[in-house]
Image 1: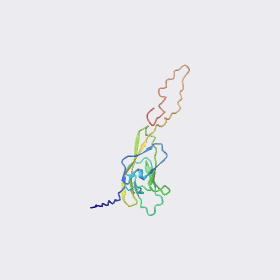
Image 2: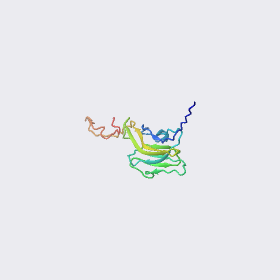
Image 3: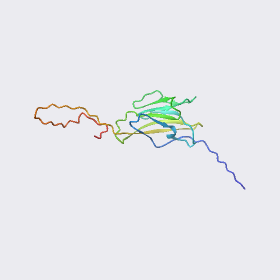
Image 4: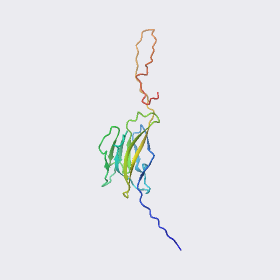
Length: 178
């Protein structure tokens, strides 16, 4: 006797990855494929952004979502035209669908090796209509910024000894390591 089994695959929804995307604080911009943020068990599935929300968290940078030329794409963007104190979301039809571009804001306050996080909600749909959403975390890694030194001047009489204990008072190091 012969037994024949047929195993039929089912279409699975995309699932957001747990690990953050890492970006250097002084990066000009970083392009991130949605497949680097989401796992879709259906290999090769194209993901399309359907929701972006930066209002839930404080964002330090700008998120640019590639919409490509996707006819009839319904994007629920609560942050479509809003600017935020620390970040923004912009939709760009010239950037391919399935990608987003992240531009870090001013992160000069992060010391070398210190990590700040940008977090926003991102929802996607795969080609079969399955949806997934979750918190996207971007880890912004600080670098050592140069200290800022300012000129000092002192006036003293001949044969007077200069005592300059306050020589560094008007200088600064945003990383607090100097």
